[in-house]
Image 1 (cartoon, one colour):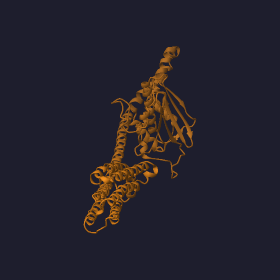
Image 2 (cartoon, helix red, strand yellow):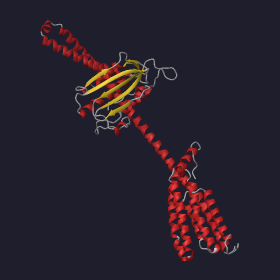
Image 3 (cartoon, helix red, strand yellow):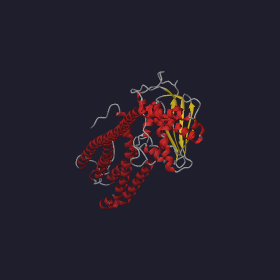
Length: 470
């Protein structure tokens, strides 16, 4: 038999007892119905062996069957379910008592009915989940009933002959049944232990798979952001120089008398200036990713959430062309954390909302970004008036690689990594939705003064992760 782990042996035994309780109830009721059938079918033996006693024996069989049926009904109650073992023992003794009475009423020690006592004892070991002592007690009581039936028989009693032989066979049956019961109990517990170990291993494997999926997603995201940072760093110089030349040219041209005299030309130059400024903003936002320092040196830095939101809106501006982004922010939005990571979270949430709006066809398309201070944390809510999320998908939106998009349009990592980013900022990313009406994502960020359990500003090198847009 496999030994239970010492640290979990008591818990394993408790779970086994709870499982065995339901098992006992099921088999006890099944065995009781079988006993009723066998008791009633015994009228054939009465007719063949003792036709003169058939009337009395038939009444006895009906009475015993009715009592067993009553015990089955009692086992259906809450009181009965707590006492299944005792009630099972009781209904097993009822046929034994009836058989002992029939032995006393017929030939005593030489009566053929003694075989029924052996049948009940042996069947209890094979079919019913008895313990060793329960089966030994049933065997002992069965023999006692047989002894009393023979000892008090009107025809007399002799130790030798049929009584001695039948006694030995009954004792042999009781011993064999007790041994079978013991090993059946060991086999049941070993099987339960093996099933528990398999279930535990499966649970550990599922947890490992989830961890691996998360790590894989983080590695993919880190590689993606590293590539983006490298690209952005290379573009900064190449883009900034021509943009600066263009801005200088626009400023010089704007001072020309011909331009000042021509309103249309002035408007064109002004539009060109705004376009170049937009390029400068995008380049500035890309610096956030290009110059992130390794090892989490940006952790714990203070930044304006409104500035992070501006950067995210600009970076996903091509997806928000036909979407109104409405803001409701407090005057003070200074928070503590990794600005680039939060920008990445906002990019993901805004991009997902814009995609949902286009798929849902709602008009006008609207994303509302609201924030307010709750204690020492800034609570941020991003809500769209899109088609919402189905209830059976809402509980899974933060699972790694879960996505409702078509194949090839997303890895299903954005929200799961965003969840980890917010969690490492001491908050939680939550999803709420009403199908057909709206979806809202909410998270919270700490004030700069917010401290951890040891009095220091919360920091974590894993703040570096930025969720992909998914």
